Image 1 (cartoon, rainbow, N blue to C red):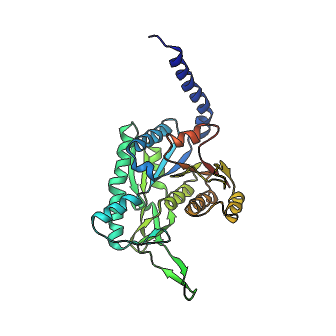
Image 2: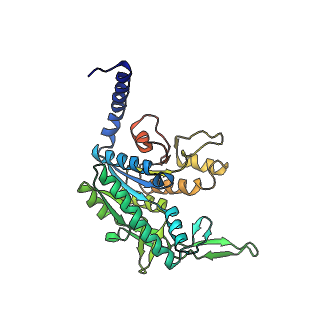
Image 3: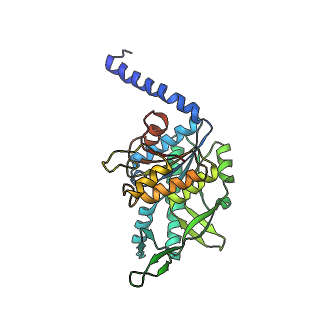
Length: 300
């Protein structure tokens, strides 16, 4: 076989990439990474396949990935098909009993099984779990208040069966990891009251990352990370940096809860949390195995 100069340069570039990645493979061998997977990346078949390949590669080089997935758009589509009306308050879906049943069906059924099948199809070994399995996550009903526009008195908002994780028992995750299996977790959990609760996937993933003492927590989103007012990616932030960026209005809107989730995870013992764009090809690998990274790293 004759290798032309053009092909040789491609092969040399691939070899250089492997050499650059090698120190990071050694650095993270045996460590646990929790990845929150959602957004447009989850709905694109090509990106979903690539995500499965990346997760399988992490496992094969000695890293222990744990996937927590979302599914808001898919739940919305199913509710629409079934003519079940829902409303949103401050960006959160008010969840009645019928809605939480649909959420559990969609999240623990079609979405979770699809991710598991994708990972298994590229050589990995994955298992689908939810917060209910082995009492992995115990939830409580979420409570929020909002000032009444007329009286300015704080009023309690009833979001129905929307919960927050109050306790995480990671035993089943650790057992899966020890057996070479990649856990894929749906954000559904039971409460001490016996009810089923739908939990925000970002919040669920952050709580699990904290309970595991994960080396890294990744939030795959539809934005590059935290941007400056000039639109430049901020590659690394501390808690103090974040306080300043919130105060001057740089961090606002939908980025606020994502940053708060990352800060909470770091506070609970995660070494570092990363917000990055899941639509970028091999975003996780670029963040982990290259010098420059691909998103915003948040440290204590």
